[in-house]
Amino acid sequence: MDWVVKWLEIKLKCRKENEKKYKEMLELAGFVISPTADLTFQEDDFIQDSFLGKVEDVYEIIPFQKVVLIEAFGHEVFLYTLEKKYIIKERLYEVEGLFDDVGYIRINKSQIVNKAMIKEIRPAFNSKLTLLLKNKQLVDVTRSYQVRFKESIGL
Amino acid sequence: MNIMSLLPLIVFFIIGSSIFIAVVIYKLIYKKNLNKALDGTKAISMVDPASFIQGFMLLVVVILSIVSVSSIQELKRQQADQQVELNTLRDKINSIQYSVGSIESQFSAYVASNAWIQSSSYLVIDYDPLNQLIDIQMMVSLKELHADAIVKIVAVSTTDFQDITEVVSVSNTLNFVANFTLNATMSYRFEVVASTQDELSKEAFRTINFVTLLQERFRFHMGFSLADNMETYDISVYNHSLGLESFQISGIVLRLYNGLTLIQTIDLLPNLSAQGNIQTFYHGSNQNTSTSTYSLLGLRYVLEVTDGFGTTLYETLGPSLR
Image (cartoon, each protein chain N blue to C red):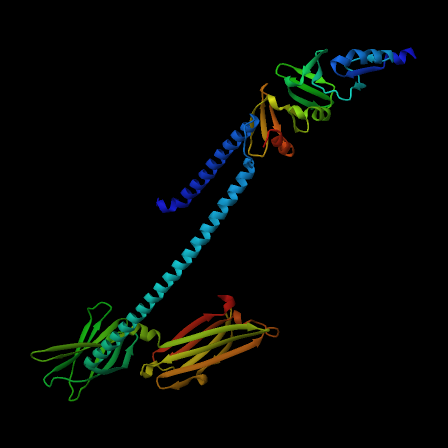
């Protein structure tokens, strides 16, 4: 049984003050706490306010305010800040559900932008909107996401 | 280049430029509005530029259609007005033409009433085909004449105006006769000249082109037809003797040749009928193409006409040899 317990990794999502308590409980139950685990232990009223992003085999915590763009490409999900590009574990639909209250907006099938990181909106004649982000990236809001986008910015 | 011809181009350019400017301005406003909303400022809801272009173009098309329809209506109204004016002008022209016709008929009546010559006629007396001379007798009836007047009938060549023949005619009545020997290859104008010691009166009364007269004296026509295996030819002749016995046809024979071979000789004199100076005849023949050895349409037809001056040949080909 020892080898099974050894590989049962779990990710912990809880408030800071409860972290130690849950960690001890889970380790007692045979789990290994790992931020990259596929299995997640989440507190009911936990609100995620950051991402765990991997860059050059190093994991960093990225506060949601620093995120510029989250993009799905193939099986990977990339997170862009003003300086760096990370790979994150969260799926795009999870991000959309978790962060739409804090100004994250889905702009097409594969991208979510942080409203606070939009520098300029450029309308095009083909009913598309192009967004210039603060990291100088240009991304398109496709027609099917335009209504939600406009609602999100208050139109 | 006329400026009016460039007008549609100018209008098109102005409309196109206006649409372009309007769309660009709208796009700028739209962009500003979006970015205002992004900054959290209260913004108004606007349609996107593509929808705006479609709507704006639709509006322009509707306006242009209205303008076009109203222009067409205006043109129709103007056309109707012009048609009314045209009809008025036509009425006026008809009225003027009627007046001119009336004046012309009055003038003709005036000329006729003032004409000096009552009537005229002529008779061909003789014709010399060798020297191309024609003897002709001219007869003129005058309406009035001074008792002392000397009357001359003058033939003036209208071909070269050099050949002038004057014949003094003496008569106790107002009818005068003069005989001329003239060149049969020319045309002549005949005039009456009456002169007294104080006065000279002159009036032309007839022009005769002898070339035409002699050419049209004798005419013949040949026709061919083919229908339902039946081919036909017909020939008609008209001859005017001009009152001269030598011009009367005394013999007429039709010869049909197939190549150089004489096929048939037909004496047409019995067909000839005469009425006054005019002789005419008609002759027709047909044959069934399925039974005949040659085609009537491929023959050569030689008409041999004999009159007081000798024999003349008229030759024609069937249609398939022409």
